[in-house]
Figure (cartoon, rainbow, N blue to C red):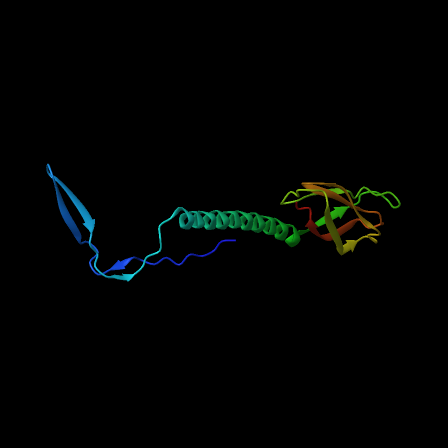
Length: 164
């Protein structure tokens, strides 16, 4: 667990004052002469600097984790929002025969085939739609047909799910 360190500046009466001692041969020894210490500063030590490093790495790991979670949530929302549209199916054969099957392309391909297609009959002409069936689900589309006597059936579809 990261422990916050409150850093304090070292404050002295005379911050840039030094006492010189002549050592001979052109050498001078300078010793700090700060006067009164007004505030003791926080020590610059490996312990304190390593604490900073631990806080940085913990923050970076948390940011990485949150970025992954945001990405997963975004993908989840995309599949929940789904996709909808309408399609008209036509049958040119005489009942009980029917050739109304049609393939519907998805605008957004799914990551898996575990998606749901709900169907609503909007209109039917020349008879009844009967049962509407979704089949041949693929990542990029599905097929739909009706088995009734109608010559034309318009359906509204809604696709949800299929994300990682």
